[in-house]
Amino acid sequence: MKYITINNRKVPFEDEKNLLSVIRKAGIDLPTFCYHSELSTYGACRMCVVEDDRGRVFASCSETPRDGMVIYTNTPKLQHHRKLILELLLASHCRDCTTCRENGVCTLQKLARQLGVDDVRFQNTKEQLPKDTSSNCIVIDPNKCILCGDCVRTCEEIQGVGVLNFAHRGSNMRVTPAFGKPMSETDCVGCGQCRVVCPTGAITIKSNVHAVWDLVYDKTKRVVVQIAPAVRVAIGDKFGIP
Amino acid sequence: MVDKSYYEKADQVIAEYGAKPSSLIPIIQDIQAEYRYLPPELLTYVAEKIGITEAKAYSVATFYENFSFEPKGKYVIKVCDGTACHVRKSTAILERLYAELGVTKEKPTTEDMLFTLETVSCLGACGLAPVLTVNDKVYPAMTPDAASALIKELREM
Image (cartoon, rainbow over all chains, first blue to last red; front, side, top):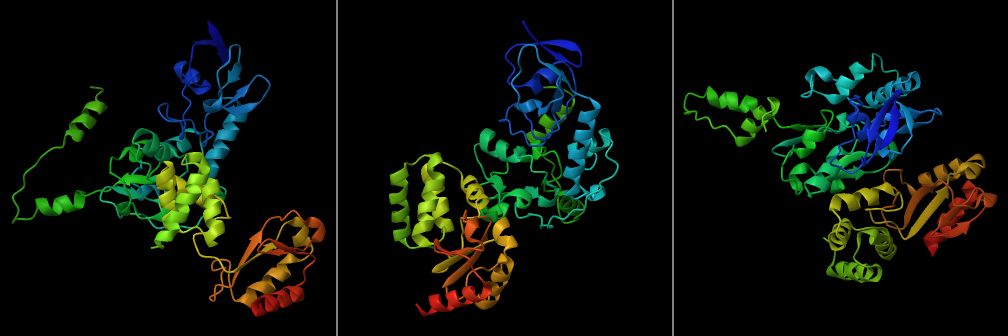
């Protein structure tokens, strides 16, 4: 049996593809933005950094587990690094949380609170870009994107559509369809899987609630309700029913 | 829309490098060398032929400063603004050229399609600083006046 010592605890492992999976299997909560086990490893968000016994800090998602490794997941150095990384992510992120659709369920918000980021010292110097509301279902707000690439990989690797990708470079980098086309002019099928993986409010589902209320109260309309299968699935999911 | 001959040219280039994803950069480099820019239609066409998504091809083409979706002028002037050239006052040359040609960073090509003005971070000729190139011909130890004279000369050619 092969072992890794995580936080002074011996944890056995077999053929996990990376150190992060071993850590999570040990029941340690190491939150990430860009890591999804079913997608390729991208290593962008750096939230999964760990420290080894020689003080070396590295991303556990991009590290192969080796027998005899000694690592720590929550040293003061790591706490400092994670907090700073998150502060930098928040610096160029639209922080109008109260009016954001993801308010309360946002992974970025949750982690910022968890890691105690109560002040962002850096100014947002990023150019503010318009929202793409052209699609019937998907709304993209580039100002809330943290460039984790989850949507890019999901669209390409899982759905095989590949509508979204990164464009440009460095601080000008953004996630967009080819040639910055509006979503309505792409091959997007509206599956919404990009929304499922997006850790912020950058990709949301278009809300038609107001339009529906108007129709419900329209005296000239007879209202018939039909519930889509997806709703039953979602409710079942919440109660852990497969 | 670009002419049909453009697609034939693209087919030729694709055949040369093989229709595989890893050929993307050499293919679009050759297309850009041929037309002095990368026609967006051809990027989409190439992406489909070599089996990558249009978004991925766009991602690669926008990553590199070298690729341009806008037609470039007959003379592409690259002014070096690397460290050595910068301290030997390349900024003055650049400003003179912007004024002389009436172009901006956002709109680098002249109306008559004669000149495109770009900056580069190093041309690897620091000993000749400040340096600029016109269609890859190197002009060493430039001054704003020498740059003006060069433009005049190129216009009359």
